Structure formats: structure tokens, C-alpha cells
Picture (cartoon, one colour):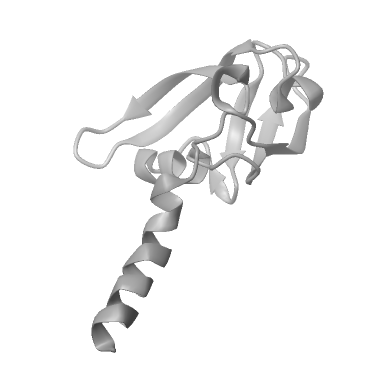
Length: 117
């Protein structure tokens, strides 16, 4: 009986590993500080895919991400940012964006299929 419970638990924990990794439809240029525990200095949007969640939210090339969830940029650990942005299709990501005009706004993006598939 215990053997089956362990298998069930391992299967449930592994489900996320099999979930299709999603895309939010943007490409960034990242500057970091540090070697062993790097932190983000800047995150600039360099490309937005037409029809993507980022496109629909009005994100434009040249905008900067100033927070990933509750993690501010600059200062957000790269490992935390990577974990926060690695969403499966259908999961959401909260970002604070600073536009080219200098305005800050919060957006919630939904991960779509990778590469617009």
C-alpha cells in the first residue's frame, strides 16, 4: 500500500515537469550584477510578438520591466526571476512595466503556447 502512495505522490509532483512551458510573447535584454548570486540590474523588452499576451497588454519594445511579481528590478535575484517567469501554458505572470514615456503600470500576462504554436 505504501508503495502505491509513494508512486502516486511522485506522479503528482512530476506533473508540473510535464506541463508545456508557455511563452508570454516578448524577448528581453538583461543586465545583471554579481557572479555567484547574480541580481538583475535592468530588463528591457527588445521584441514583442504580434498576437501574444504581451502584445495584447500593450507592451512595446523599449519598455522596461521594473518588477517581476513582487521582486523589484534592479535587485531581483536572477534565480527568482527565472522561476517566476517559467510558467506553463495558461498560467499568469504579473509584471510592472515602465514605458518609454516613463509611466509605470502593472500588467498580468497569460502564458500561451511556445513560439505562438
